[in-house]
Image (cartoon, rainbow, N blue to C red; front, side, top):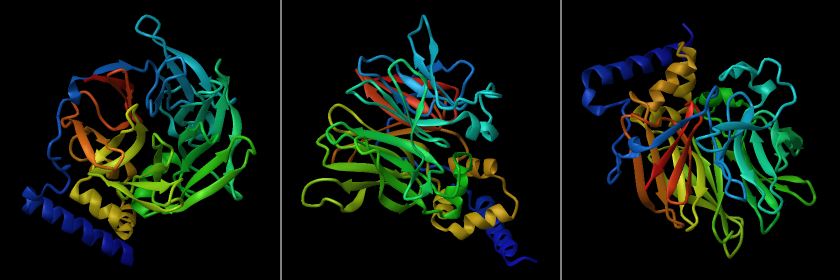
Length: 371
């Protein structure tokens, strides 16, 4: 028998034994977070008609929106209760067959817009398309044009999130892997892949430079209020990294926060604090597998599919967890929907006018939580 299959079989049997005979260990259950408020289930939801996966939310410079990218490659704008969602932009000119709300096999054709950010100076919308790279569309929308598709001769494979530095006229963005595409995101976690990159696009020179490499699933990015540092969510390691851009520590990287789950996007509020959306809290099983790449590879070899493994990582019940961090990385507040009654698999939390606008990369709706 293949040695890998032997290891995988032994691993699975051991996990089953622990689950069956020591259920109190809650191997697949997400942990309780001390001090959390389980009240996100009171959020109002707005369905994205005929679409799924509103991964990121952004408001234009006039406060309009939010705008969001969905799984069929479109970017939609919320026009209020009366008018609902309208189509604002697309990232691909080839829309043939791009009619189903969720068709992963067509994402590379239709596009899959993830991170969105408006340039406040001119109203342009910059888009991190997972397959098509960095894109931009004007204030009137339409077909987005290409900005960048590679860095240092290495094409982008999984363009994920962006943030714009208005002062420096640059865009920071992540490429989560140089091996696996977005629809293979579980393989990034399971394989121990550390090929992710953080890059900078200079809007004046049009140059792309790699400023951090060898990252484990770099995801959301955010700038501090004073522009002195940049945050990068490293999903696999359940932490937020801080890259100092200015000051005595310029160029250095440290750990800004350790989190009880897999972080997706990070968004700063008007006070300089940060909201982090967790795709899911991390169970003992998920932590063990993500920390031991051989285990993830073995589980794939033994025949578990990605959907099954995603379910085991997310826990028995899909849920929602949002964490607010101070500008020093301290946890200030934890909001949850522990039972997943209303919100699940959240990908971003955007604070605006006393409300949290909450996105999800998998669900067919966004949430609005008033606090």
